[in-house]
Length: 132
Image (cartoon, rainbow, N blue to C red; front, side):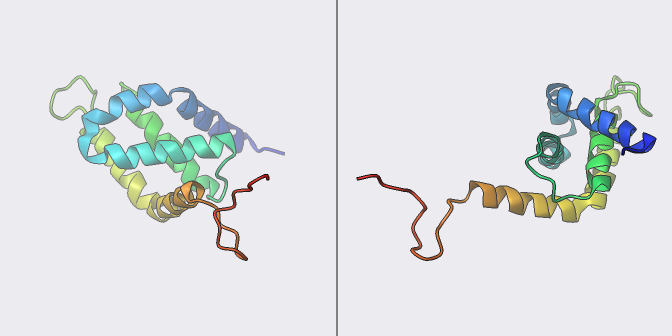
């Protein structure tokens, strides 16, 4: 059974996946953190879709909250302030990256394993079946 805090976190994770396009649209303004933030977003989306569950819940929550903060235009330094409006967003992403760095490395390894061709141990073949 879910506790109230878990339910709130689940709602926040769902918001991130639903607002993924908005978040990705804002990311180029944080040039230095674009790839890392996109990686966090991909991990959250794969977690939400049930494809990647080998991650602690706190790491998914931290990533989702950081991305929601980036999405929020009314944060500590409003994004409309030219030059410094995205400084707090970059700081939050940088803090999140430091916090979940190990989990992101594991996620990248998982992604690589998913895209690698599957081989069968006995034959070393790529696993394709040829029907004759």
